[in-house]
Length: 219
Image (cartoon, rainbow, N blue to C red; front, side, top):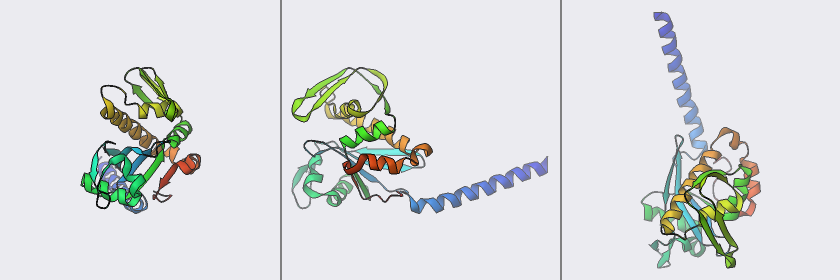
């Protein structure tokens, strides 16, 4: 019995050491603890109404969002709204400004046109969300038509885009930020699943020009 206990202890120790070596080998190849600035741009105006610093560490997704109407004192362009930073300054300057704003270093960026959300969500089989209430809104100038019933459901394509962009209630931007946080978290969870990792090259091809990033293929 004692020999069995010692054997189990030694085996667990060897597995723990192997796990540490495996993680140390993979860590430099992936994102590690880097933060990625995720920007969701509007199809018509090009403004980045979704802006969040995302960090995936030990299976936990941490998201820090920046409201689109936040005023930012920039170094070279005076005071700008957060959703106008990318269009005026470009990705590198935006990373620097948001790093200063949040007090957190941001190493990479991923800009996604909302059209890419439709395509990737379709390819992933949609995103399961709990729509809190009836959501109805339309804006013909932007080709935006939102018509969602309340309840737990899988959203994809235009319905998911509508869920992300809806802000016409008492919660305004705060409600929209919470929905964006929810969807971003769900998408990252799906992308981190082993079955999905093999699809990443296909997903990137599907998104096509609707994605702009400085992430390496491995990251």
